[in-house]
Picture 1 (cartoon, rainbow, N blue to C red):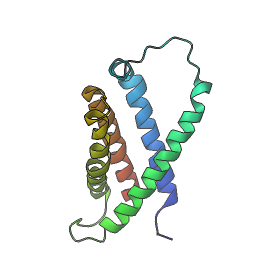
Picture 2 (cartoon, rainbow, N blue to C red; picture 1 turned 90 degrees about the vertical axis):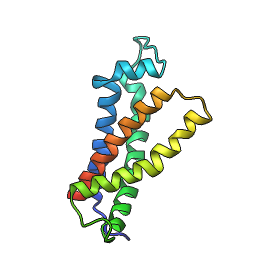
Picture 3 (cartoon, helix red, strand yellow; picture 1 turned 45 degrees about the horizontal axis):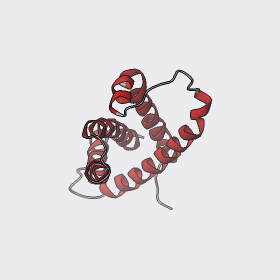
Length: 139
């Protein structure tokens, strides 16, 4: 078993969930809905979203776990220069750039996703990933 901090992983996943909520809700929700061509009906219920929210959190836990493992290996590299919040964020940035940014580009290249929506989603993912990296590194 790898020596990762499971509490840090759960907290990092919660932070990513909260950041995602803020990006897609109070902060930039109207922009996101416009970019995603979502038209609220006024009949949406919080209880209808619970299953997706649980799945979202579980996916965040998996991502945070993988990030913690990558960070564990990265901190043993002389290229990393040690541990700490900034190094956690640096590691998170490279994971985001190499895996999230690139793989989601397929949605624009082949699936016809709006580039503006893609940039929006990637900005949200970047902020979430950086927060997870900082939490994992300092915990």
